[in-house]
Length: 350
Ligand code: SAM
Ligand code: FES
Image 1 (spheres, rainbow, N blue to C red):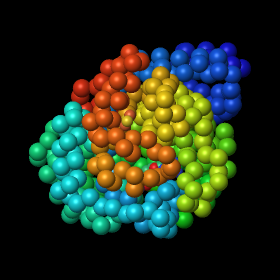
Image 2: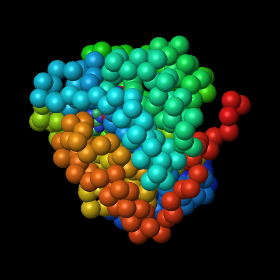
Image 3: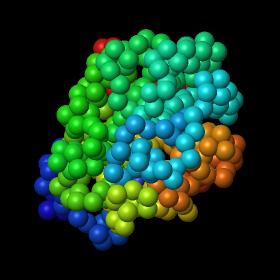
Image 4: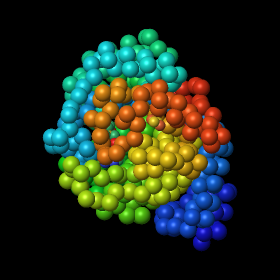
């Protein structure tokens, strides 16, 4: 079976669910090395050697939701909540731009303090003043709001569907439905956003079959960007005590995601680097990933955006993260992307 799968990958024939499950169950390091090399080859062919840097600004940790896994969930009273004002976010984007980033990712909990008016003002100011692409990652809003934010100048939107298993999704998300999440992803694409989604690996109750379905779902949704990171257990959540995902399983899913989706943007996630601070990012970049999101959030806020414990880069300045990441990229013979790193998918609406 394995040789047949390798041949299918080499000749770029689609893998079915059973074959994906077979690869996800592999544990022999030599076979996994072959998998990563094949994913790396496809990465090189479809998205090249450039690694795109997206400056990440975590601008608020207020959240109206109570997702069971998340450290900044509404009911976690131990979190010190913060919000950055529009001027401060603007200044931080300006720092990201000076550091050379051609994209900023504006991320927060689902915080309705940031009204449509506030957000449009911010986006328009950034677009007037700087040559930078804007990715939003602020959760669920109405169709009209997504449309207005796009018209104001937002280029991309990130919203993970977290798991393709609707029952597991329902157990983990008391405030949102799987169906709505998938509908929103379709809206975002329809409006014209370059649309990103993704999943967590190692959620309690998640099976290998679920992960295979996640990968098939990435393909079906025809996404521009796909984030795959391990679930890391937070002690102040209802899921306290769960083992969480492994770096190895995360790397397998990243590699298969590259093999199946070919020309998408795939980040080497901070969560993976948290599990393997010494080489997590490099491993992901050598198994199919082509994006890194260095943290630009002002230092005084970083420790409070704790989705999971032991998050890396809590004490490093934006400049330190910038040089750390560049060093890691060069060390594996890759180069830094110099343009916006837009989606490589050709669509009628751009
Ligand atoms: N509120 C926005 C949303 O829901 O899309 C963006 C912020 S949300 C905190 C960003 C992502 O963090 C989620 O999509 C989830 O995959 C990830 N996340 C949350 N808790 C996590 C945990 N314990 N381990 C790993 N990733 C986690
Ligand atoms: Fe922040 Fe390495 S990326 S210290």
